[in-house]
Length: 382
Image 1 (cartoon, one colour):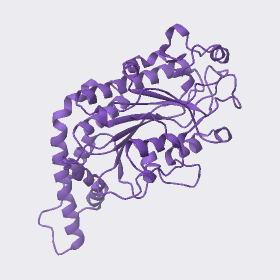
Image 2 (cartoon, one colour; image 1 turned 90 degrees about the horizontal axis):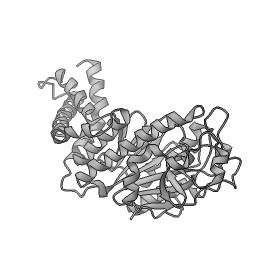
Image 3 (cartoon, one colour; image 1 turned 90 degrees about the vertical axis):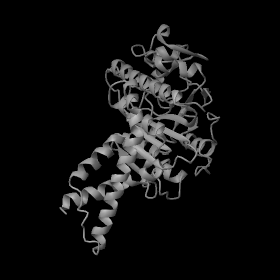
Image 4 (cartoon, helix red, strand yellow; image 1 turned 120 degrees about the vertical axis):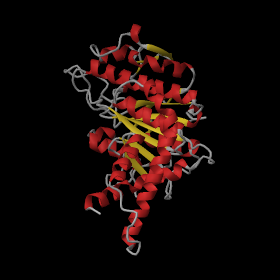
């Protein structure tokens, strides 16, 4: 066997746990969370807009969204008009806005690296290198626990947490198909323990690939229901894995760049439209397949933006922000406090909800796990 073939087999072995998951039809469907990272720091003040507050227009004479364009949600708050696709989700009480989420002492460290580290680890410890999901699920599992669409595990990164990076489930099948063309000979010397073990892994990979491919085939047409682009493709992959009963409780994908220091309006509108149309398609597909009640989608970002616009028609790094959760078991409405734009802290909206309270809510209310954080939960999940 060539060294390249040997390394290829070793690189694919984490995917074997998909086989165990795909055989779990007898198990109850897991309670699933889809984490959507808004990379770069989303400007939540132009996402969930206090459009009846005169201070909003004073702080943003150029960037403020005109009142007549805001999607009214009630209580003087509204969504950016680019989020029209999610308005039915709000009206159906399946969308929760959690306002004033922040990291303690955020104003002391506005760097992307430091801030996203807090969100990914669920900790203020700069030396912690384990994702927060590893704290919620402290015991190793033989089955696949998480899939990150793309190259970054982020909150799924932990020594004992069984998670992988994947661009699409077809990617795994394609890798194995390439391996199959140069497979290890069936006449391998079984007296050599190392070669015998590699041969066994190879056969399991072939078996897993065939079963996963069979499960995915009935859901191929689902791709056509998602908007074009990397984000839509990622949501399509997650939807097909959920519908194919892969029994994976956690998914993560990203959309960005939301780091809108310059000429924010057009870019922010495009990103929010991409976010909203993708998630609306995701909800529609899972609702049609009777899976929506078992899924919670949650957005997060390293920080919000400053309350006032800058001189480059953009916004700079801030602290507190609003994020939303959607799902069939989400209790729609507003949580936290509406932003007080005349009581800013160093130019930032003041935070009232510790970001770890959101994680504590998922741990206790959704997964029925004990929370590793001594934080009150937020009742946005039924």
